[in-house]
Amino acid sequence: MAEPLLTTTGLTRRFTSGGGLLRRPRSMTAVRDVTLAIPRGSVTGVVGESGCGKSTLARLVLRLIEPSQGRVGFDGADLTALPAGELRRMRRRMQMVFQDPYSSLDPRYTIAEVLAEPFRVQGERVSRDAIDHLLSQVGLAAPMAAAYPHQLSGGQRQRVGVARALALKPDFVVLDEPTASLDVSIQAQIVALLERLKSELGLTYMFISHDLGLVRYFCDRILVMYLGAVVEELPSTEAAPRHPYTRALLDSTFSPDPALRRRLVALKGEIPSPFDLPRGCAFAGRCPHATAHCRDQRPELAGEAGGHRVACFHPL
Amino acid sequence: MTALLTVADMQVTIGPVTPLDGIGFTLDRGEILGLVGESGSGKSLTAMAIMGLLPLSGGRVSAGSIRFDGTELTSLGEDAYRQLRGKRIAFISQNPMTALDPLQTIGAQVDVIGTLHFGKSRAEARRRTLEVLTQLRIPEAAAICASYPHQLSGGMKQRIVIAMALAGEPDLIIADEPTTALDVTVQAQIIHLLAELVRERGMALLLITHDMGVVAQCCDRVAVLYAGRLAEAAAIDPLFAAPAHPYTQALIACIPRDDTRKGTLAGIPGTVPAVSAYPPGCRYHPRCPQAQDICRTTVPDSRPRPSGVVACHFPGPTNG
Ligand SMILES: Nc1ncnc2c1ncn2[C@@H]1O[C@H](COP(=O)(O)OP(=O)(O)OP(=O)(O)O)[C@@H](O)[C@H]1O
Ligand SMILES: Nc1ncnc2c1ncn2[C@@H]1O[C@H](COP(=O)(O)OP(=O)(O)OP(=O)(O)O)[C@@H](O)[C@H]1O
Ligand SMILES: [Mg+2]
Ligand SMILES: [Mg+2]
Image (cartoon, rainbow over all chains, first blue to last red; front, top):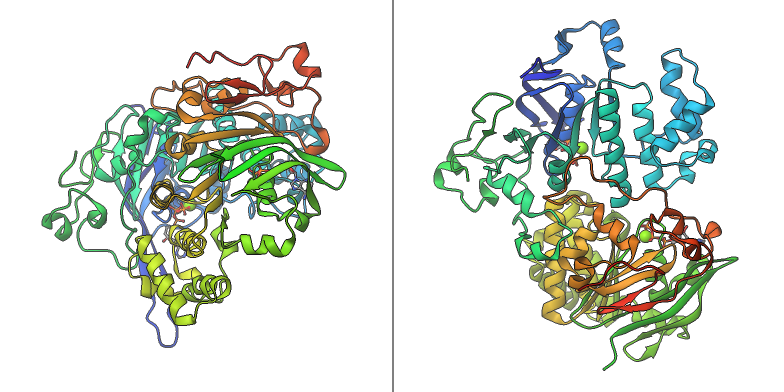
């Protein structure tokens, strides 16, 4: 494998919350000991249910928040040790599309102003044509430039968010559920757009989603997270899942094929509280294959980053 | 035998605009009908029309009919309608947060259905609430009753909203994108749950979604809307085996399948037109790869297709 664009080693982030006069602060590990390698020009998918730490991992990778432990390497540099000035220059090469289209656009600015903002921050002028082009790339009509965010639908707003992240033509883009709030027709459009931009500009993506069906289509390799930890790495989309959780995720996807109806199996039970993790494997309580051993010991994610890794005592 | 719900040639007018026109479908007990289309195609307005809630946004059903269990709803007074809503027709919204009061316990909110609509005592209502929560396989129902919405996960909140809908023992449930905001795993759970309830209790479910994957996995029949008109309606198997309307074909192609090759997912170019800019002829023609001259000028009639109808001048092969 060629030199990866981005690596993380033992990346961990804990959060403490609560704590007052009478209550002890509670601590939880949002991201636990994540070691990964993202090859140049690849699309690495990160999947898992709400709260499993996907967005926290994304913020750690871009150093928008500091890790409790571990390191992030970007293009040979140790991002976690970079001084502020160099970090700022590096940031231009790394962009993020945020999950929430409502809070990520300032209601006081027109769409044209929103899209001009990244250029302005870099001290560049931007033409009306460039704005129009950005808009058409994400399927919005040119007159939309004069509109304010509140005049757009949720879907249109998220398209503006995608356009804004792509404005400076970065090398590496973290896409944090960019299509979660969109119609499937628009989702497919955006994914097609992202695919095209990737091959035209040689981009590298980290694509976060809870939809394994979509991730299997779009990504080259897949990391599956459960309660802060990577439980499986699939080195290709053809690789058959070995972790029962990955299998369950796959069985929860809605295929547009009535013949596959029987296969849709709902995962039972709720995710345990991250503040009160069970002793052994975090998935044991919902796992059809769990044994006493699983409830007692936590399985490690063994093997080399980039290969097929699975954290399970009884892999499929 | 007539269906529980029959919508025929329905037109909706709001002030100067006519967002819906020629909408028709039927839905029977024990059946799930998917109402699909992109954002702005008219799914929620159709639901509002059935629920008699159009006056809230200054609109009305200006033509056609909505028959529910033998009663014509378009001429029903507001008092009679209020009796129907919450009791015989229940509504589940996309966002459970808007349906739940953050300041009241879950129990109090579900109990109200019993006390308000069925004149039960508070103790009776609570007993019924616990029964419904247990039927929905909500663990520790009593503890859940005592908690506030913010203490629950999104999936649990949506299950509570479903419980509120069920507490009234409705004949018809209208669910407007009930799982879009949820994780796929929870989505699968909720859809399973709804489907089971429909089969077991013989209720009818109108499931609004923009996702043909959801439709394929749980509906019996589907009505596809585009820009306020019915594009195609049919039973699931023939529809997926041979979608006749180019719009239906495009919607199905938006969801990657196991055998979808990389780089071939395209989506549907363009967007649904605004009500004020509905194009003449077939409203889908500006986005349709197969559009001919007649499509630009003449509204296509609904014509039969296997187990349904399609409104297209050049419907695709329906060899099913
Ligand atoms: N700033 C913070 N302070 C305290 N806890 C936090 C903070 N940010 C995240 N968390 C917690 O860390 C866990 C992981 O959150 P994160 O947002 O990374 O999950 P996610 O996988 O992105 O979920 P979703 O799919 O809902 O976006 C959650 O339990 C969350 O409550
Ligand atoms: N009160 C109103 N006055 C005028 N037009 C309206 C009104 N409500 C909705 N519309 C228009 O009617 C069309 C159908 O809207 P509707 O809300 O039914 O769409 P939808 O299919 O539910 O979309 P979504 O998937 O975004 O919920 C849209 O073009 C919308 O802008
Ligand atoms: Mg997130
Ligand atoms: Mg709607």
